[in-house]
Length: 76
Image (cartoon, rainbow, N blue to C red; front, side, top):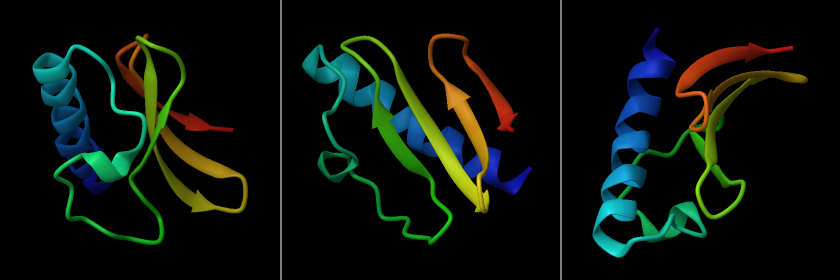
């Protein structure tokens, strides 16, 4: 899936940031991320050790990566 490939690039940036600084980024703006689309990917820090990367596919439809589970899923 095209979304997953793009999302994996962002996940790599997040993981590199965490490795370099010892913390997850607070916002996506601190990452070296040049991709801009109306559907995403978007980044959300959940707590000090977990985050989600997601795409908005439509009204209340998302494709989400959960860093705790390390897998992608569709919502709903």
